[in-house]
Length: 110
Length: 118
Figure 1 (cartoon, rainbow over the protein chains, first blue to last red):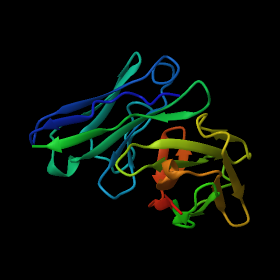
Figure 2 (figure 1 turned 180 degrees about the vertical axis):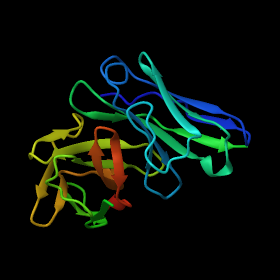
Figure 3 (figure 1 turned 90 degrees about the horizontal axis):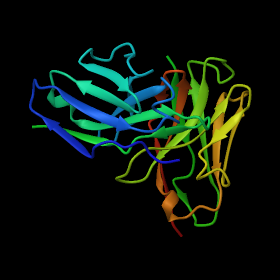
């Protein structure tokens, strides 16, 4: 199975909004609403930020939001803050009863 | 709150078997609410899903690793385990265990670094 495609890097200034895309196929992102997003700071374990495309776990800032259109899911971070600087990964359930992660996106706060 | 902790050798020789365990606290691995999974991350690279085990004992593996991977559970110890055989340097990575719900990989262990080297 191929990794989902994400941009290698995205940057923005404090207070701005950025969007990270996650492109798959009809066998994963496009076929299921089991798309999730993870934030990973250096040397730390990933943290679930969005699940089932649009839902935020308790405790995650409402500055993080998710959406999906066709085979592409997106994570938007609004009101960008210095603490948002991290790597972000998407993940999807697949038709093969497996999971696949995205290639990862480094977010830089300018 | 659910907590997970990986344990196992940090150094494995090429061609040998990597064995890790994940101890779960704050919940039961026999719960129908969860699958239990392993994910790895080579140094400087992205996340790779290795496989899951369901409370029924059903297992699901990454096709690229399937021939070398076994995930099992020990309900008496509230642990699940990973075995990866015939390892090479390409298997050097941080290995994470995680709980999985319909929402995704919701709780993660801190990760354990495994180096494959003679």
